[in-house]
Picture 1 (cartoon, helix red, strand yellow):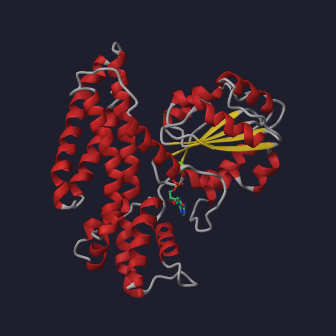
Picture 2 (picture 1 turned 180 degrees about the vertical axis):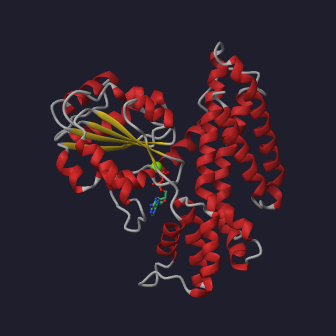
Picture 3 (picture 1 turned 90 degrees about the vertical axis):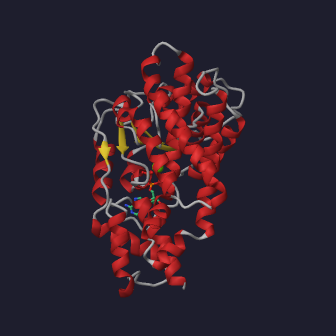
Length: 375
Ligand SMILES: Nc1ncnc2c1ncn2[C@@H]1O[C@H](COP(=O)(O)OP(=O)(O)O)[C@@H](O)[C@H]1O
Ligand SMILES: [Mg+2]
């Protein structure tokens, strides 16, 4: 049952592929890709039963799971572009969506995923299951994705709509609770977890309350060493060359640096309980007021990190906020950022379509409107 979520994601990937209007020459390849995804789904259902006993099957399942989540990320990112294909009757949106530019971008990202799917399929010989190698093409694609998504707490967004209550609640939890806590912001990709965490991290009360703060982007492809080093650099006044240190030594170094100081460390986009466990030992859990702030899509990670701390679930934006966000992102040229009356109707339609997901509103709505304004 553990893989039900992965099966769901694979289904979604297959559906989305079916919706995109690919150029004729790549269509057979896309069809093969969809067939491959279907086979993976069938195999996953079986694998679930076998997993406990067979390490190789377990590794394979883990490869597919990572792939599925990356594919989901890709779809999250392109959700607006894909959504806009549904507006075929609307002339300008259709033209926008079917421009070569949009297709090329989706195509390029898909290519990375496609390579990995065939890597996985080949390396396991139609799921005959041999040992899992870390294919290099796969590693390069990962590296690129990681760079694209890496976050820092700087560059605050001036166009934020409606997170005031979430921010106030989280700031209060960080500065008012005396005990060590791992507080998590949870929700699907693109809903605004990182945005919210940034606001909290930079809030005046938070800056005053903690002696030291650090922000790290964890992601799926994290390396424990890199994360520990990054935190050390942020909390130490001077650092030596750390390249020769063992992971355990880095862990101890960080532990000592944090001991006796009131610290806040943000672990942005953490995916698994294993990832949390690989870092947890470096954080002293005594002392007054020390906190970890996590952002994650996975509620289990939140509860695993701290079972006593209620995960803070982000909600979808209201219609009103969605509209505000669309106008702020789309009409950057006009001083008052007001929607011209002739675009009101289509704008409202976009807002409904995006179901309150900020990432979708920005990518689909913002771009589509800008295109229209430029005409
Ligand atoms: N409340 C909001 N107001 C304005 N923009 C937002 C809001 N929430 C998210 N965004 C924007 O949506 C995109 C995705 O948000 P992000 O915080 O990265 O989501 P997550 O971390 O949950 O995947 C970003 O471009 C961000 O600036
Ligand atoms: Mg994020």
